[in-house]
Image 1 (cartoon, rainbow, N blue to C red):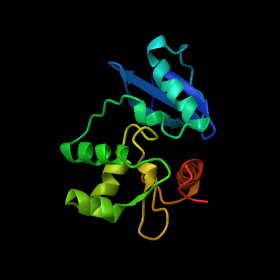
Image 2 (image 1 turned 90 degrees about the vertical axis):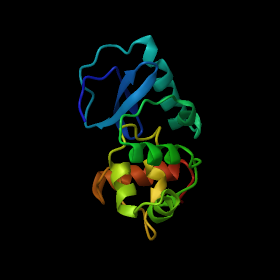
Image 3 (image 1 turned 180 degrees about the vertical axis):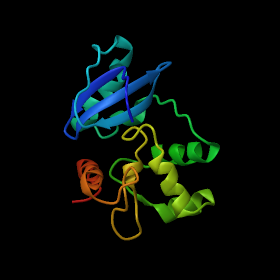
Length: 157
């Protein structure tokens, strides 16, 4: 994580730093505080608008957001499958691993490496029993973020 960011926006989960590359989001970082960032360029408006719409209740707003993802071929496969999980639904690490002919641990590693959380909804992947982790963490603030997102989307009460 780190700047510089092309845009910074506030959300119910705190500040989000956005990197924009060639007409698509290449990173979204959760930030502890708002960094000094120049006013967002008009080019980043699709990202800030989509995030605002998502947090306002349009659960599919981020599905339409173009993303540019740098990763291994396996990570690309996992991330593409994550984007196909509808809002309000979850899939277990094990089920996703079986679909991809891999292991749950490898799927978890790809989720942990996801540069565009929210738009590539790794929060929709859960453990066989419980939420599992989020961004490589199994508790604390990160797990609360995952819980908040799943509640926001109606996947958990």
